[in-house]
Length: 213
Image 1: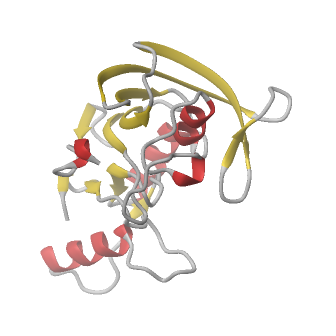
Image 2 (image 1 turned 90 degrees about the horizontal axis):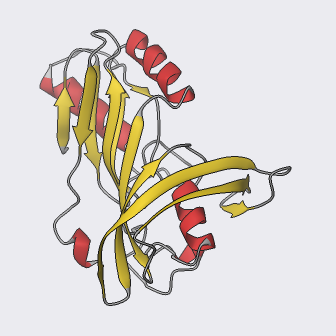
Image 3 (image 1 turned 60 degrees about the vertical axis):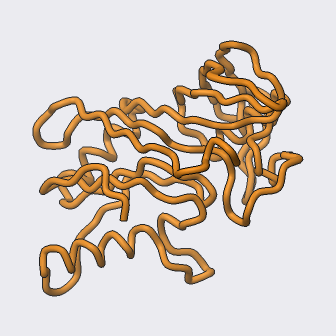
């Protein structure tokens, strides 16, 4: 596991693209299972290991995932996330030349496997801002500050505005990447430590070659 931070209350890891965070009908190995097995072996723990999942990343997305090692930490982190207190920053490679910077507010309607842009009376408000870091071969590298945490928000909004994430065929990308991988990376999360009250910055670097996807 690519461990970013570890203490008695938190385990923060850099999830690889293509890995499930928690189990589904496929029965594939998950990040949660791997993390529990690592803690059990590392600390020679008998019985089951507690590890609370307080947020998720989509399977094809890589980057920062924060896990709680105690129920107290899980409860307090969940409260922060429900109030949108933590700051989340993503990197994405998207099709076309985006504006140099922009803030988008749209309304997302969630369906079973995807999200679509709707109208205010039928969808939930989704806000994000971004700036373009680079542009080459009709691909923009953007840094995104996520203000709300809607289902597939970044994927749906960038597709709606004509800049699908590279490899995200579900949302209209013309580029094909290996299965279960898209060019979206959760690079940083800033939150308050659940017991010490300190502001914590967790940064995950993308995998080697990510910028060339």
